[in-house]
Amino acid sequence: MFGANTTNELRGDYTHAKPDFTIDQDMRLYSAADQAMWRNLYCRQSRIVQGYASGEFLQGLKLLDAADRIPQLERISDALYKATQWRLVAVPGFIPDVAFFKHLSERCLPVTVWLRKPEEMDYLVEPDMFHDFFGHVPMLFHPVFADYVQMYGKRGLEAAGENALPLLARLYWYTVEFGLLESKDGLKTFGAGILSSAGETPFSIDSREPHRVRFALERVMRTRYMIDDYQKTYFVVRSLDELHRAMADDLRPVYRKLATATELDPGSTYAGDELVSAPAKVAA
Ligand code: HBI
Ligand code: FE
Image (cartoon, rainbow, N blue to C red; front, side, top):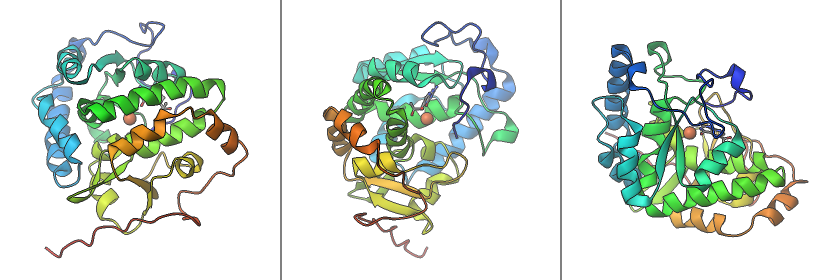
C-alpha cells in the first residue's frame, strides 16, 4: 500500500507544494471518469463495510455525505472541525514522515488529491484520495480516536529524534491502517487500509488465514508488516481508549528498550501472544 521513499518516485505533482507539503485542491483536475470512479468506489465500499466496520466508523461515514462526487476538502473540513477540531489539508500524495507527523500533531489530516485509475480499482501502490478520505476521515469524527491520532503525531515528532520512526510506523500501520476492535457485536475493524479495500474488509474479519493477536504496544512495534498483500497478522484492541492510553506516556524508554530487540515476523505467533479467534461464521 505505501512505500516510495523519495518524492521523485511518487505519482503526485509536488512542484507547487508549500514547505509543509500542502497544496490547493483544484477541483478542475477531476475528469468525468474520475467522478465516475469516485462514485463506483464509494458506493461499492459503503456496501461492503456494513457488517465489518466498527460502529464509530459507520457513524462518521454517515456524516460525510460525499457519495455523489469527489468532495471539496474544505467543505468536509468545516464539518469535521465542528466535531473534533480536526481539519483536512490537501497534499500531492505521500509526504515525508516528519511533515506527516507535524500535521497530525496539529490535528490536520493530509489528504491526497489524485484518484486511482480504473485499472487500479482493486490494487494501489500509493494511497490515493479514496483511501485517505474514505478510509481515514470517518474515524476522526470520534473524539477519542481524534485525540489518539493527534497524540500519535506528537509521539512521532519525538520519535524522529530517537530514530524510532520504524517503531511508530508499525504502530500506525497496525492500528490506524489495519486495526481490529472487539465490540459488543463481535470483531469489527476501524483500519483505513482495510476499510478502503474491497477484499481486505471481509478477509480481515472472516478469514482463518491471518493471526489475530491482542494489542500489546511493544509486540506491535517489533512486528514487521506487509505493504503489498493482505496482512498476515492483525492486532485487536478492546476499545479505542486502549489506544489512547498507549500513547499517553513518554515512549522514549520503550524506543530505547526496543532498539536492541529482534524484529518479529508477521507470519508467526510468539510466546506471550494472546490470540483472538475469528468469529465462527454462522452458515448462511
Ligand atoms: N503521507 N500523505 C501521506 N499519507 C500517509 O498516510 C503517510 C504519509 N507519510 C508517512 C506515512 N504515512 C507513514 O510513514 C506513517 O507511518 C508516518
Ligand atoms: Fe492511510
